[in-house]
Length: 176
Image (cartoon, rainbow, N blue to C red):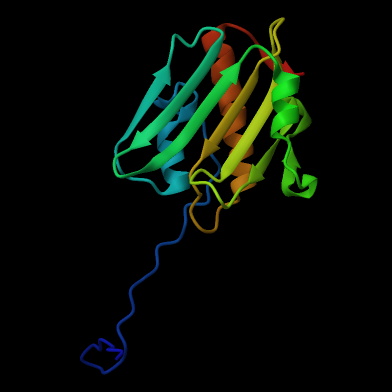
């Protein structure tokens, strides 16, 4: 049985629907996992609960970090390494090449793709130069709010993450 609320006029009462915030992603501190701007991540994903990022190991030549949220799957994963970038890219190529979006040339070699099966369906990976090294960097994160362009958000977060990576590791990121 459906029940409709009516105002004194007898017309159905409607609630205004909040419009999604479609502004581009900006680089602003503080950061989750040292590389992803937290306020922008929250705005893009709509997450409001506390997030706790946890790193594995010393993060000097390889790094893994996951942002945890109580009561749900972690909404952000970050992984990077200075070794084996070509092999990592090859192993992670999507089985359906048409499902991937190549990174803009200034970001190195890599792709962004959506995977509706995982709790972090937005996946972007890049192999780039940083000084005399060729690190690879991967971000995967929770769904974006309705109305946002997830691919452009993945590109924006990767661009920021590469810049932060260069600041942390004292090198200049550039295409591979």
